[in-house]
Structures are given as structure tokens and as C-alpha cells.
Image 1 (spheres, rainbow, N blue to C red):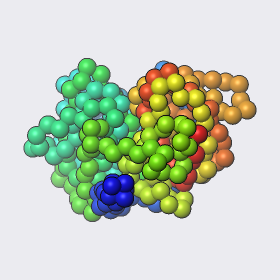
Image 2: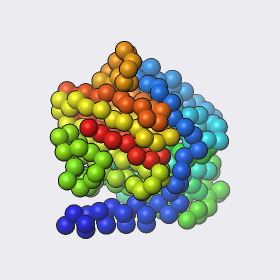
Image 3: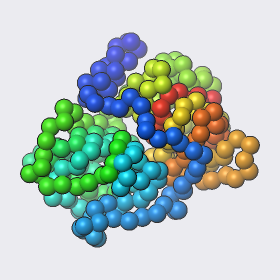
Image 4: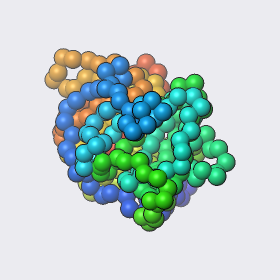
Length: 276
């Protein structure tokens, strides 16, 4: 059964993301951005306050390199049909979001859900929750919005995964989480071999106290739900990280983590990390 589940995950990851990047073009550093210290602007400055708000976490979406940012939607928001010049991945943090063809029936993705929007494909984005927040990342910039008459097919296909359809694995299934931690993971994209770029959701249990050691050149984590206390090893400063917060880590850096409730984090890394 376990082999069948892992085979299914690999099929989804490879088949749905034909052009998934295998390496990152940026290196991470030890940094923390708490949710209440996010710098906000407009996602599409040309539309002003008709655009969703965008909050910087890492990188610069107006530059040419990879970046990750928050997007905040008002209740009832629905965009005109449009395309983007780059593929992006998203994880819902709060509310209900729909991202699909303009004629598609509503598929409202709740917190913890994941989607991929290929470059060049026409779509709309809508929100119906009281508060609607998502984490978005791109492999290269700048992130631009263009009209549908500029649409093109880049070979990728869209993905919408409701959080109820995620497959969670624990220490019996994977080698980089110790048995005592009771941590679970859901693979989202990429491959967990060599030093390849990948994205995963990590579920930390209530009252977890442990460490995450980064073994890769690029490690970036975003709190999706719950909350945690974060502290870099050998540093005094502690930060309380609520949903929408971010921390990055240099290679061979250890982060001390504790929770008082079940907490979900998204991790994008250019190689391995160890949780214990």
C-alpha cells in the first residue's frame, strides 16, 4: 500500500508539472519575516486598489530571480480573465480561493490547499472568504499580468488540489523525519532525490519541540496555519510566527521550533533538511 501511495505521488508530481525547475537560482539566508511586519503594496499596480494586495516575504517579484510573496484578496473579489508571463504556485492560508478557466464551475480551495497556474494560460482568480490570503512563489520574474489575447501554451497544465485530497506520510514512510517527532509531510512538487528543488507541506503536532536542520543552499518556510516559536541555533532572538510568516535558513543552519497547536508549514528547498 505504501509503495502504491508513493508511486501515485510521484505520478502526480511529474505528470502535472512537466516543467518543474530542478534547481533554484537564489541562495537563502538566515532571516525572519513575521506576519505583522510584512511590507504591503499592490499585486498589479496598474489597477491600484482594484488589485489584490501583495506582501513581500523573500526575493523581488519585479526582478528576474525567484521570489515568494503573500497575496490578500477582499471578499467577493473576482479578476478579469488574464494570463501571467511566468508559472506560479500557490498555497491557501486563509479563506476560500478559486483559480480556473473563466467558464469553470467554482472550485473553492480552503486553507492548506495547493494550486499551480501555468504561464500563458487564461484564467480568473476569485475569493469568497471573509479573509482571503495565499502564499505565491515564482521561479523567475518579473511577475506580470497580461490580457488573454497574449495567451500561449508552455506545455504545463494547471493543478488544483483541495487540502482534503492531500496524502500525508509519517516517519514510517520517509527517512528524514525521526519517529519521535510525529511529524507528517505531503509532497507537492519536485523530487526528493539528490539536491533537487522541491516543495512540501509539513504538519507539526501540538506541543512539538524540536529542530529543523537545513542541508541545502536554499531553504524557505512559510507558516500556513497554526503558529510556532522560531529561534536560530546559537542566537538569542525568538519570534512568534503566525500564518503568513516566513523564515529562511542558510546551509547547515538549525532552527529550533516549538508549537502549542497543530501547525502547517510550507517548505521549499533545494535539497535535504532534517526534522527531529
